Length: 323
Image (cartoon, helix red, strand yellow):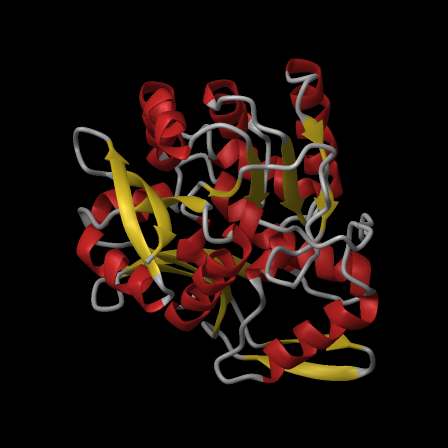
């Protein structure tokens, strides 16, 4: 296995204003309107997401952590020694600690995280706990092509770590494309360890995205605060509300920001009209049955090598290898 030899650099915390403005302009001109969920994660958004994970309705993080705590040793045995661990969207790093502690002699850890504040926080803790593991952070959007940094020691394999059911935030075509990126980056001896949320009672699913404390609503609407701050927009945030509902036919939670009234917002001199009750899509959270996920992985040239799940079949962590 040969890693790219090109030098690596930390990219800026925020996308360039022109890129952000172009994405927002395109989304607000679409029918229906939509905004990319990746822009949730400024410093405030990242902190709010950590609070979401602590809400009683949000079972996903607790269940996945339980699986990792109970099965990390089994996962490490299947993965083998000397891995270069590449994590997409590293977040707080709690799950990463469990994995790195279980793995045999990992050579380096490469977190790819769009929020530099979340990256800095997790790396401080990880570097202190794992002084023998080289830390090679990349502050970037993992949806873009990046060159992996070369570690001091040659790894025996590459492990892509993608926990948290984040793959479910992509539409089917985008999720498939990302699985193909994993296929390319893992190399012939590598693997991907992917968390997926499983289909279940819609009431349980909807409660997870509509917590009683309102943290998820605050997280969603924080996107508008970010656009006001970084693009000089004029969203009246109080005139919008969070709405998350489960689409049974599509098998996904669909999160929208809904206008409470007829109103206007402005971006670089352009006026965008919102009608009362108009919905703006901001996130999908797809849920899978194990057989349908295996079929999607197969389209990317990957096979499910092993599955770990909780007793109630609420969540699964799957190890994927090249076919």
